[in-house]
Image (tube, rainbow, N blue to C red; front, side, top):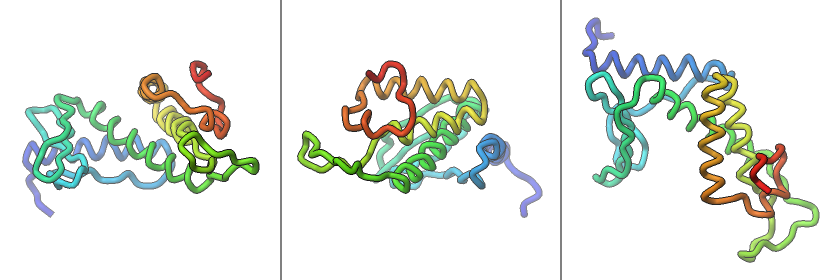
Length: 168
């Protein structure tokens, strides 16, 4: 173990600690570590600029996205929200059941019971466990997604959680 850490390393450690503390409130095990250097595979990594954090996504040598100038709390929220969505998506898949009267969907496949709301709602719930503010932020984020791409009729039928008010 190194006795001296650079300011850069300390800021990265501070971010991981913030993520760990926030994720512990959800009660779903240990938080995932974030990447501290580029991997060029589409995974996000963190760069420190001054005392601020940039979340950067690179793939095959190209930068695809940069969320720049975040404070430690905002950077942590971004990673925690990703972990919440990932857990919720795994649970949705594990618990998904095809309806007994499964219909053919407009694109020709048979309804398998999928609904985005079945992972969005639990992800919001996880964020609410961390804080009301983070839950509200997650809810607003998903509301924006659903305004751009509303739930399909089959997703509304398959929802296991009460639909958001504007889903009708």
